[in-house]
Image 1 (cartoon, rainbow, N blue to C red):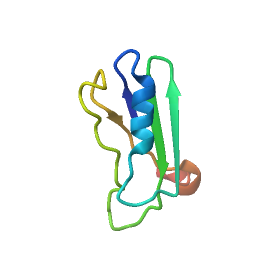
Image 2: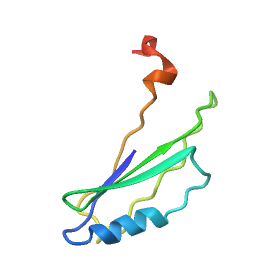
Image 3: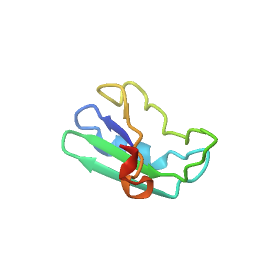
Image 4: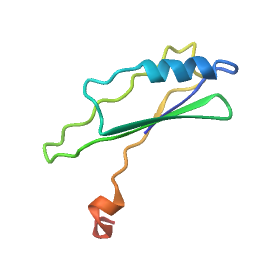
Length: 86
């Protein structure tokens, strides 16, 4: 999950920037969201492997477009992994 906050009034520009970014390989699924406060969120779904390879990530936008560094989180599906993993 990738989330950034645009400089006030530049949310549409950040949204278009995020939508235009291509990753080194295609995820199983990718969704882009916008929220109040000129925030943009991109969630990608990936096949996992036991090799430990990390999936590609969206880069950091130019500093003049965002108000703070990008936040990134990685999650695993509880339904796929099972509750015994907690």
